[in-house]
Length: 368
Image 1 (cartoon, rainbow, N blue to C red):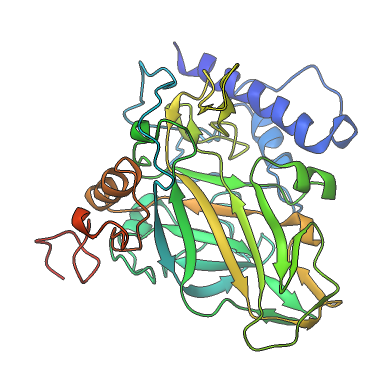
Image 2 (cartoon, one colour; image 1 turned 180 degrees about the horizontal axis):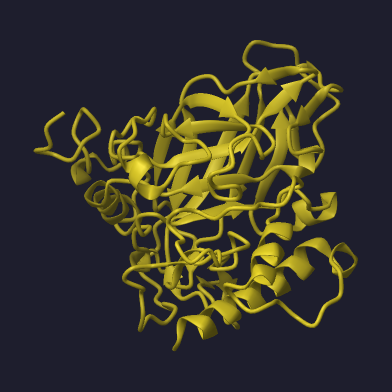
């Protein structure tokens, strides 16, 4: 199929998702998205980027024709959603433990090559992430993740208490899970895949109804909050927490599109069963990322806010820069293997399975 046809299909999907996420009243009525690669297409992509900021005026250097689409090379084709039902394992996951690195009003996915154009973000993982980040620059960067092979960029809107940023302390837990029942069908992220999870323009109800909503905002004994709790117990052991899951089904075609999300989808329930499968138009099962963030703030929460707006504007970004063999080892050992692994790929309840990585969190035989 010609590139133009595929791009137009992506634009149509993006438009449908935008209408769904913002509501019909949130966008102007039009005859449909413009032709990919045209000036109108760039304007459309910029104006519907999902961030309540000024329109994007540039595209990633990995998108030389400037249409907002970065095709996978090679694409994954010939895949149908797996309806397999392997032996039940309660867990099929591993952790990426990554610490805070820096804050910056940058977003290399939504506003590439435009430093200072985004609302402020709190970055974890790769130490070099900024507006000019590319797959190659992240690959060459350092990382605060326990596994040196994870040079991915992870970021969230910065949390403030009044005018003071509230920065995560210590390694944050980023789960990589199976989002589908056939956990043996999950494969690694392609290098360079990037996407935005959630939408800072969403309403409180849209945030609550999102497929990625797990427990909302919580602290102490207060759970499932769409807004920040009014008060949290003023104790050293209490922090503000949130868990939110990402879509885990990929179309196999694009590493990015103008809306930064339509090439990814959440699993769906197979009719007549309780099984989760990928939808037919997004058939490739990838790890399901789940951010479990902890912010050291408690007591009176009346002045707590996000740089993107209200509590329900929470969202996050992921830019994959894992060392491919390391990620493949973790996915194969922990997710496909049905284990509950730490950042070494070790499941303490199944010590006989060993670990995917050595004591330095590297592949065995890999030099520091």
